Amino acid sequence: MLRCGVCGAGELGPLGELMTDNRVGDQRHPTLRFRRPGVLRRRPEYTARRGRACLSCGALTAFLDPEDLRSYRAEADRLIEPE
Image 1 (cartoon, rainbow, N blue to C red):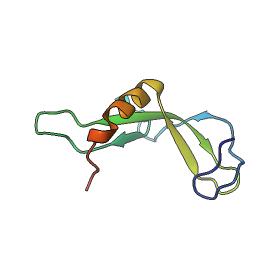
Image 2 (cartoon, rainbow, N blue to C red):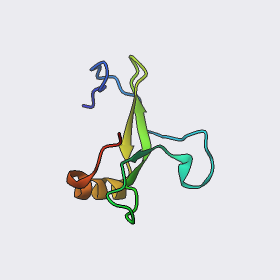
Image 3 (cartoon, rainbow, N blue to C red):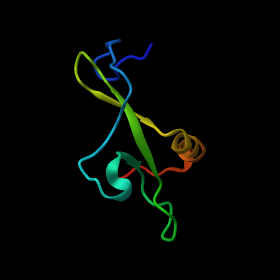
């Protein structure tokens, strides 16, 4: 059973699509971004397209796409947190 990461309640709603107000290109869905690992390297980012809301406190829990989750797992130990 999934629990809310904020209040601990076991009452999460159904899985839904996460969207932002920006409807341009790839910015339609929330992304998890990290600092560039070097000057000529791409900025690592992972898209969350699905999520659940807690029925008790309303907090959102986002889930990465399966492809982005595989990449995130493979790169996690090399990611640099933003300042």
